[in-house]
Length: 289
Image (cartoon, rainbow, N blue to C red):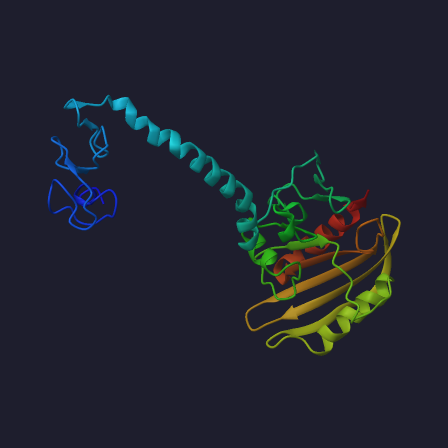
């Protein structure tokens, strides 16, 4: 454009083949003595090199700063747009805002999820968890927190929207949150009833290529003094063996789903070397506000 613009009529953009007038709109034209560019009849300075057409004197170089001033609102707008949509883009790629640890102890690090109304503890060597309930804009938020021993497993787990059944992590990965109840499955708020209704179709008709074995049937227990139910399954595929543990806790709260869900998926090698104790400690650490 810098090479062609000086030869165009400033009114109709027709090629200025004649230096004194436009052959298309008949606008009188003036030619810059410095860069040979075309200017209109009332232009004082050449818009391309700053040469003063009337007095044959160049304009001061500072006049070009108007371009920088004009770019400031544009840059501010672009910066705000990148800031407001950056977290949403991260979420679509499987990442969300990072939680801030509130305390630490030899047993692990304590984290809080204020929008979901709970806190929990993770082993100190685990990766930083992500809380997708705090996503910006709120329209893309989901009521789950994801934690993993290996940070590389967070993206695939988050892409499944809180359902770890189809995940294949390299190490332990956990999903904590408040899924909305499925009225087509069961309307009860009893953890054992709901968990049984969810597990039965998975065990009887698993996804293609997945073999599901019940290691520990649905049973009741207490988590933080609240009613809960738990089941342990073994997922076997052609390339991996993982243990899946799901716990439902009765934790009704205003504005939240009545049941709180914790899903853990652990490779078989890690499950047999303390993985079950790690998940049990995490579940026991959950407290509701």
